[in-house]
Image (cartoon, rainbow, N blue to C red):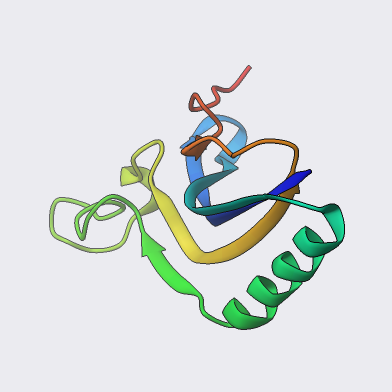
Length: 110
């Protein structure tokens, strides 16, 4: 038996090291299951088709994230963990209900 875990996934700013680095993070939207693997594959494909092109643009934590004190865009003022760019909806077929968020801890540069 499988679960279909549907996530909103986006890129998050990790920090300024090595010219800036990013990581992928997701927030659980819905879990369906348990169900047979074939049914899970059909549902995941239906979700992908339904949500294809439904992208939301993310801009940090707020309107001031990534802006200098005068309100002009400046990457030097990006806050770690803020999401930028387009978020997408993805469906994963997994063995158990998915966690509310992934990763469970914000990664750090090593």
